[in-house]
Length: 164
Image (cartoon, rainbow, N blue to C red; front, side, top):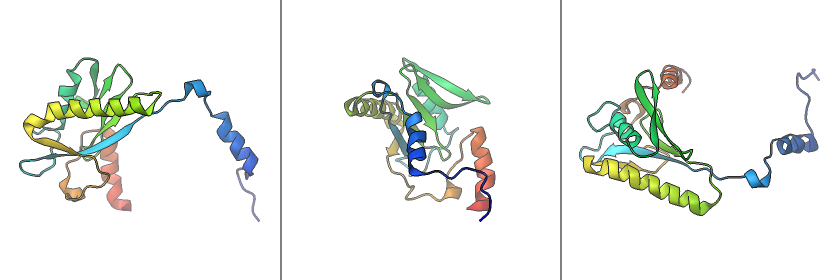
């Protein structure tokens, strides 16, 4: 047996490690993560970042609403933040994700999700951009999906083909 650089843990020490990170019950909260694929309902394509009614347009439209501010990186809007603690973030293939505020009840998260979907529908419906709330893209191949202008996604784009 060789020396191990880390002390091997027993059950009690692992439980204690997790318990040390616990928050008191009065600080517990629930947060929603809700990611959606976007597509153009007229031509069945994924919107690009700089398309006429693409991702930039959608995020800019959200940022113009009360309580919302745009988050910029190298001159590109890459997310929006609301003064309630929620945000809408841009994922590598143009998916948009609601990262909800920390809330106390499931009813509040349900209301937040519905308000988010209403907002997005209001912004996108006239331009025939629809959302799919699924975790897998059923139609488009990776090479057909436009990458978004977020710095860390360029690193992923360069690295992922090497490792699968």
